[in-house]
Length: 95
Image 1 (cartoon, rainbow, N blue to C red):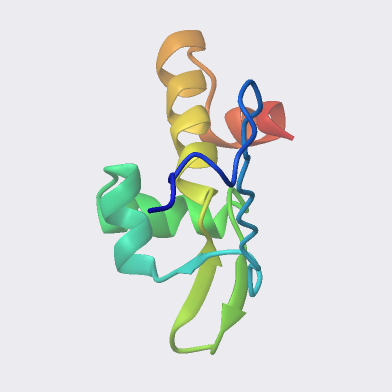
Image 2 (cartoon, one colour):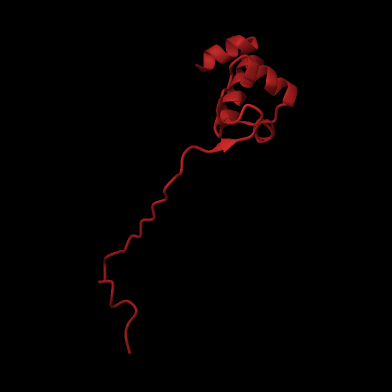
C-alpha cells in the first residue's frame, strides 16, 4: 500500500507551470470590432478613416484589426464625450 503523499515531502509544495505559446496577436474582423466596441458600423468606418485604428492584416476586402482596438476606440469615444473634443482631437490625444 503506497501513500499518495509519499512523493511530496511534508512542508513543500509542488508548483506546476504551464506555458502557452501564442501564434501572434489576436486579429478581429470589422464586424467583431463593431460589436465589441459597441459602435455603429458607419461611425466605426468614420473613425477608421480618421486613423483611430488601422488594419493589421487580412485582405483589402476583409481587413483584420488588432484585438485591443475596441479599447482604443472606447478611449476615443470617452474623450469626445467627457472633454468635448472632436474625433480628430480625441484620436490625437490617444496617441
